[in-house]
Length: 293
Image (cartoon, rainbow, N blue to C red):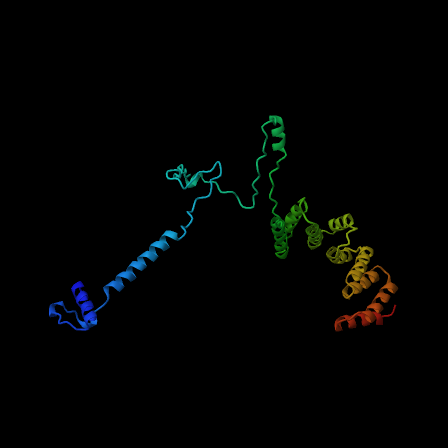
């Protein structure tokens, strides 16, 4: 609304008449708004905003924490610089050394500034490099023993004796393999019918009570006519293998051949009562006992 329009309206309100306003000075009815009211509202809003801005407390300024002595203040421009890195020397693959597995790295002894050279050498001498001990079965001894067995199965007794004697001279021979080698030597003598050498070898090992040894030398002693020694070996085997009837039966035969008839019959009677026998063994013992003395 223009100022002329407003003045004319106020005059009309005072006189109570509605003047005839020229059309050029008229505004549409829906657009008539009080300019003064809007001006006052805008002015009031500006005053309120100015007062709020003026009296509103300012936010505290953020300051960086104090830098401890000896450190670099990274907030200052130009202080932090990119560190210079020396180019790393790459060794060729042929010169690269790889530590062997399971080897412990020893720390060199630290020598103080006041320590003498002799003391440093003495301390270094106390550092002992660890030694790796790998426990493996003695495969070579096992292979040597298998060579003897193969030669004996092929009935190549001279070759078996050669391998067996070499095994007996090995200072790393275990107790179990030594017993087997002694038994093999006795059998090689018997297979070659070298009875005198067998008897001499037996007497050199007479205290040997190994079960496998006795099972080999007892029949051998029986064959060479050493009945008394054979009976002793059979008796010991009967104690070591109480369920085997062959040993007391062979002992009875050795007693009979040594002209000990009554002890032989007593052994057979005991076998007939105490042992579980096959049909052939039982008939043989019954026939022996049925003969007159």
